[in-house]
Each structure stands twice: as structure tokens, then as C-alpha cells.
Length: 69
Image (cartoon, rainbow, N blue to C red):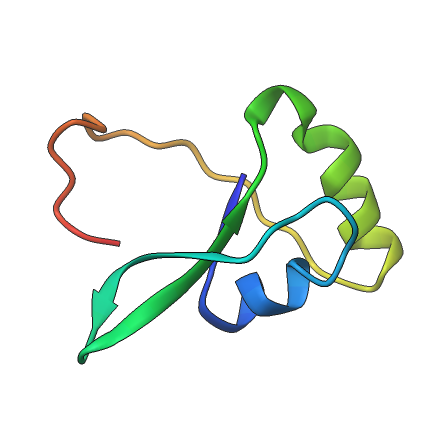
């Protein structure tokens, strides 16, 4: 599970989710947070319990050749 920008800042306020960054946009670091897929169920539950909406999607491109965020 990964979140970017303001979603990452908000999700990282929950215990156990660390705010980091990935890449840049307009010269600024892009805020990112995430958790391993095998433990995402409990984090998704925490997000929902705290009033967040959650959408889950599958990565379909080769992770070795990303074209951006």
C-alpha cells in the first residue's frame, strides 16, 4: 500500500506508518508513505476507522521500468 502527496501526510499520522519521499515534482520532494502488502489489511482498517476513504489498485507495469508516479 502506498500513498502520495497530502494523502501520505495524513496517513503517516497513524502509528506505524512513516512519511518518506519518492522522486521530485517541480523541484520538491514528493511525500510518500506505505506499508508491505502482507500487512496492508490492518492498516486499511485503521485508515477507514479514522474516517479515510481507501481505494486499492493493482500495479500493471513492470516495476523495473516505471514511467513516473
